[in-house]
Amino acid sequence: MGSELAVLFRRRRTWVMLLALALIPVLVAVAVRISSAGSSGRGPAFIEQISQNGLFVALVALTICIPLFLPLTVGVVAGDTISGEANLGTLRYLLVSPVGRARLLLVKFVAAMAFCLAATVVIVLAGVLIGAALFPVGPVTLLSGDTIGSGEAALRALLIAGYVTVSLLGLTAIGLFISTLTDIPVGAMAATVVISIVSQVLDSLPQLSALHPWLFSHYWLDFADLLRQPIEWSSFGTNTLLQLAYLAVFGTLAYGRFASKDVLS
Image (cartoon, rainbow, N blue to C red):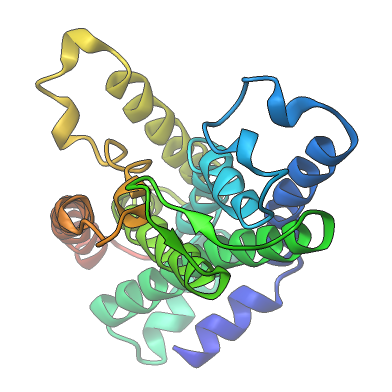
């Protein structure tokens, strides 16, 4: 596990993606600072409150990143898990080491989830730091009307980062499964990202409302319940159960495919 994490976080590509994600809250904060966009009534719901409290930069950045930027980076990492090793010709040597196929899949999945956690935490921390640097920071008024201190608000932001990380369980499992189907990492990455986009498109069609609760992306933006006093945990629980269901299904498919695959590369 330690070796896999070291390989993942030593890659220049990983750090480039994390840096790109960290730049998003910076760009949001700078744009609001130098213009009147904060009161234009456009963009995410929290954007008008950025100029009054810099802690909202992290929330706005997460809202912007969840539909596209986070799935894009997660698709790159998850799609590369098995197919990347096959493409480099190192997969058969890993299995000869010996490393069991189930163990290899588990390690690859945990490493991909570690990246998901790192990505969301980077966005939150970058948002909090740039928000504190450019705007006043003080008590935060929650959606329930209660007011909490900046310290507790920062903890809520980290809790939201945890919610977003859990939300990416299903997509990561799908990417892992697709990665076992091909030796071409770019194809697995692209397919994972496309599936993420398709899920969100389907979720936006009212004619398919019966399907929406079963889509892995349906609850991605439902972290608003964590901004109430007391915290409403129902959406967190529902989202977690849905993501675990996707993990069980696509994890089983990934193992079934990988366990019977003739590894030649």
